[in-house]
Amino acid sequence: MSLFSRTADLPGLQGTLRDCTSGGKGARRLRAGDIAVINAADLSRRDAQLLLDARPAAVINMSRFSTGAVPNFGPHMLLESDVLLVEGTGPELGAALKDGKKARITEDGAIHMGERQLGAGHVVTTEAAEATFTDAQQSLVDRMEAFFGNTIQFIHSEGPLLIDGLGIPDTGADINGRKALVVSPGPEHRNEVKLLRNFIREYDPVIIGVDAAADTLLELGYKPDLIVGNPAGIGADTLRSGARVVLPADPDGHAAGLERIQDLGVGAMTFPAATDSATDLALLLADYHGAQIIVNAGSPFDLDGVFGNDPDATPTAMLTRAKLGRRLVDATAISDLYTVRTGKGLAWLWAVLGLLVALAAIVLIVGLTGSGGFTDNLIDTWNSIALTFQGWFQ
Image (cartoon, rainbow, N blue to C red):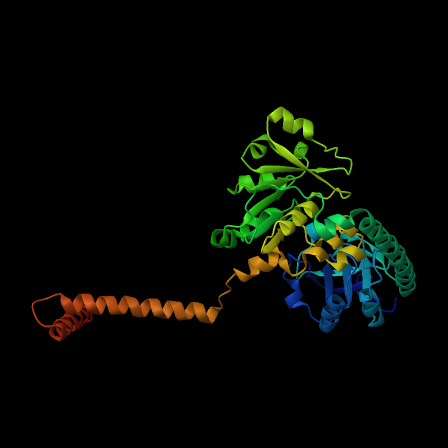
């Protein structure tokens, strides 16, 4: 605890607070000796290096530097550079945080601004970080063994589905050779669909709504061509919108929500499989029926999700995406292609061009107005303006 100052009026490590969370602007102002405030569970090596480049005296994490889900090196890098770490303050600190204000951290992990306490967390020691890292290593190995054991089991039961598409229904929708958009009800799916509006307008893809995301599509003005999921969580208007409905079913053919479909008088077909993920079934359906490109919104998948024990990062999700291969594209990649970022220099260029066009229009109007020639009209107008200004200053 040599970092703590005992000579100041109040005890504790003192410095300027910098809001370095995703919504804060303190990261650009972070300087040596400041106190960085972040909200990053399982701090990565890259993010730790970005902090170290600014040489802060302390880093306060609203989350935990290591949750135990993955063995991450970020906290070790900070501790080795004698940066004080405080974790687990909770999001309440963000509401009280004022970027640029002086604050202090006491030995027990309390954060004060003057005499007022903003929050409290736990000081991270090197010993605690090492113990968490070791436990996380073993936990990751255990989870990966279980994960790939389940993967092999799924291949045994659903090999015909993955290889030859056995059990995939013939929907009657025109998918072959077209682009397909599969929208799943993830946390960001609504915004992702909004950012895809130019893509949808240009290519008119086959739109497949998964579970409650089908309602979102209808609310945003897009009628899905297909709906895949349990109808119990889908609105009646959406089910009656004219989309073809596909119900995930157990291998024995039982489909949850069939009674609701029958009560609404809507036709539906079943898709029997061992997985209960409607997103995986929708992706396999689009792939089997020959979609040229399959854009998936609302259901990202990556290795970090597998390592982090994300409940949606399942063996079936991994195998499904491996099956689709190069034809599968995440929605964020497509929306980035349609986002044009203009710099300040280009904005000034457009402003200058606008002034030149306006000036040319004025010259043209003046030159064509009057009884004389084009040049004579310009001279007469200029002389008139000059005489007017001369009269003002006399």
